[in-house]
Image 1 (cartoon, protein in one colour):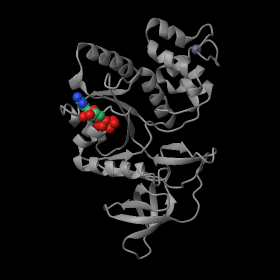
Image 2 (cartoon, rainbow, N blue to C red):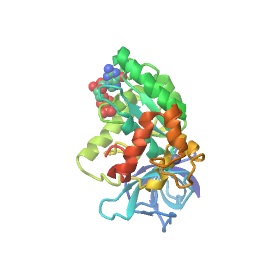
Image 3 (cartoon, helix red, strand yellow):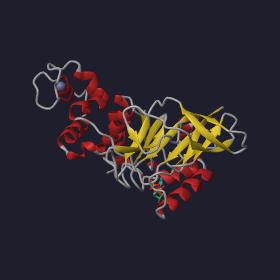
Amino acid sequence: MKKGLVIRSTGSWYSVKDESGKIFNCKVRGKFRIKGIRSTNPVAVGDQVFFDTAGDEDTGIITELLDRKNYIIRKSSNFSKHSHIIAANLDQALLVVTINYPVTTTAFIDRYLISAEAYRIPAILIFNKTDLYGKKEFQKLNEYKDIYEKIGYKCLEVSAVAKANIDQIKDILKDRISVISGHSGVGKSTLINVIDPNLNLKTKEISDYHRRGKHTTTYTEMFAIESGGYIIDTPGIKGFGVIDMYDEEIYHFFPEMFKLSKDCQYYNCTHTHEPGCAVKEGVENGTISESRYISYLDIMAGDDKYRGPGY
Ligand code: GDP
Ligand code: ZN
């Protein structure tokens, strides 16, 4: 029996890398039950598994799935109660943001961040295209950084085109499994290309493959970066996919509000209209950013609360 990391999933076959770096083509034996969710796929990229090679050089059978620290899912379109696990054991979620070209709003960022919180994946903001910024854009960038760094989210300022601070991204990616998201046009492919040109070619091949309409729901691949670490390619998904949240738990995913909420007068305070609300007080005295509170109210009021970012 060998231990390995699942780096590719086609839905029926899995590429599993053993501890020496050798890759085996594996199938799954038996049924894996995963608590709390009904999934159309038992094993996903990022999973740590045990497998038997049965004397064969290149193929194997996955016999056991190790506990996951987290996973991201997408609802299967056909069966609303079934989910598809896109990837497991993510170390971080990188959101590529641009102030302009295109504009990334705090509303969008906040929706992404609450999904990351709900999935228990540390999120990092990467502000790209700084080579294009003038005084006004830098001002805006600093406003954004103030908001998010204060809460504890790491922020990087980079330019893929000017190759500025690319080493900082490489450092962050090193020896970790990362998922990269962001609006179309923010420079994800350009960044990946600068980080590792080889990787860019591979991710391009995958998205072309998907554009031809094959295996769009089941195929996922994790790419090894030359300087260390893995990037998960999730074609067709701008954010994380769908996540369910109850109204009364939404503020749990705004870490700065959650912290203050312990001082609210009512234990079931929704931080909208109640007297003695420590969160509202925080907004008034500047501990909580107004834009974050607006995002919170919008998500509470809107019907988009059942959808992930990017929808
Ligand atoms: P994606 O949709 O997120 O993958 O974005 P792309 O990587 O395709 O980039 C979209 C456009 O933005 C392309 O024309 C890139 O050349 C450009 N771009 C990407 N990064 C930068 C950057 O750092 N500075 C500038 N000026 N342009 C960039
Ligand atoms: Zn409150």
